[in-house]
Image (cartoon, one colour):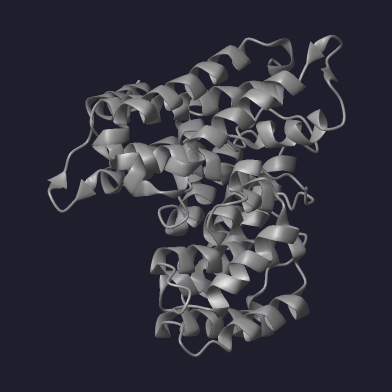
Length: 383
């Protein structure tokens, strides 16, 4: 991290992938604590789970159930052990280790209880918190690559490469998927994910309007893309050209009133775009500004409100991008800012997200442990 602070920046595996970069250069952290063995363990776990992560049907299959449960359990145990290590006790690392362990434990328990579809979402979202935070902070690229992905399909390779910030190899794969659809036989889901990853990179990391617009124009040349994707690309190009829609680099937000004013202005901009996919580009820039405000914020009363509005802004694409970061913002708001007036609103949004997560064609079926968590939060706030 650029600076150490106690706010829960909720990046799941951010500390893992950042330390992977350090581990490639050194084997020592905090004196005598070796990092490389721990990072190798994490890489090993991710490698073994990779096939099930990129092939949902294999993750849900009864024939793989025992093996998947063992792999998730082993990964979970490694994160619990990691929490005890000296280098994981610093202010910024401690929370990340806790969130990773908590997320993997939820994936493990829900899989064991038969909620495999939700377990898959939880596991993938915990891993995908990496790219959410990496792009949020505009972290530099790496050259990490697992040998096990070398024979995998283009989309699977791109997903892992993007996860570990190997943008040089990931972006060309995503672009190729979009430009050769539907002849490449990729699913619509893979197409949409590829497009959103390209959007994440160019808007949050590269941040060069001319280059971004050029890429959107290139992708638009594929006339076989679904009509709604052409509409999204057109809306994104339009957004880049309208100066009054863009965020001001140094937004002055010093209290709740000015924060609400900023969020309202950004919501007004987003309202110009009819569908959620079209407004994603607006929300990405909005959340990036809110995230930076959270980093440098010194106003304790403002902090829970920043967490709430971050969660609200990012909730629009949390499901399609397998990103549970908004839920973690809300948990931080509820658990550490219980007396704030923002806490009840954080709880209501959290309950809404959980209800949506467990609602399907058979109605709503919320697991017992999730219900108990909600009751715990309700009790905390009522007191």
